[in-house]
Image 1 (spheres, rainbow, N blue to C red):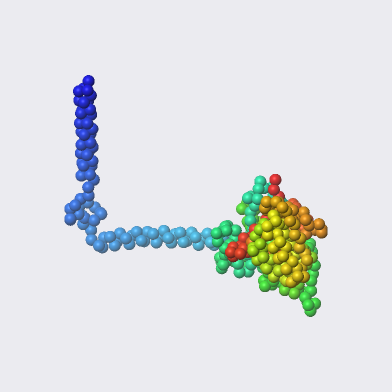
Image 2: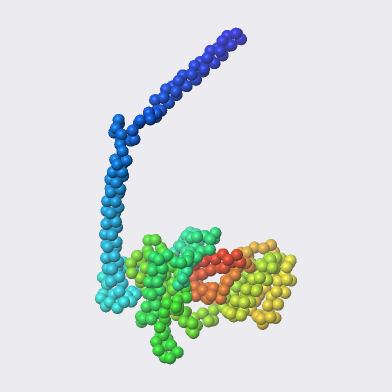
Length: 416
């Protein structure tokens, strides 16, 4: 029996060896068949058996180059034709935009008195009525919010860059700059030539002349695009010697700019309650209070500070810092709430909000690491509606200690 198994094993080895040799032979024949010609007199690509000189290939290259030039010329001609058609359409839209009396919301700021077609106006107004500039929208969560980009005359702050880069685009791209310049000019036209239904009063200058705003009075603006409806713009203007702000809302429903609202905003009596939840971080709180003293106490002076402190460790140091600021700056508009609990930011904000009992106030939920300016506080007042839950505005642009800027603006949404 063992002898028989040995014979079977020997036959199997010879069979495998034969198969290996056969495969090697087939591979060798395949390589011989596919091997390139080694003839030193082989001709360059062309007709088999004929040699071509340098002139032939230069002519061939010239022919291909002419073909591609012809194709490029044809494409350029098509592009020029499309540009011409686009310019014609733009001129038609601009002529409609420049017509006076385009409806209750038309801007028409270049003096053409003709009436725009009613069907076009109905469509444009229907786009505005559908957009969130007029009504709120039910969203499943805050992640469904379309954010606003903020801009000034020289800068655009963008959210799409995320937190890994400073969200500032400078200089602004030419196409975006032209768009924003057009929007600012339209806003100035609305302010300088108000309609009867505008929510603003006529105001005279120091010598009794009509008050005229220009682009230097533009403070900041916000815009965002709803892909199926159009672009919304919020513009704010202010004269250096006046306390009131002028707010203009425009909407571009994939057509000419349309005026939605124009109003005057007085923020002189708007108080902000800054609520800071804190635990142990006394060094950071001391740095926060230095910025608070420079901005809120010395410049703004319309601030209340609420500190919600968790735990006992470091509480005495926080009290000492607050008392030092009180004695140095004669500032008494603060509240210190002590909780003998484990730190919970949501719990601290809730307790801090409920600690206010002096009437209507604008609340700013703040972390101890945040650095802000007086301009930011005014932006909070301009973009918030105290006492409103549905249809509120909230702006938060924070400059952190590491020079990271975050700009967030939520329009009139409400969540389910």
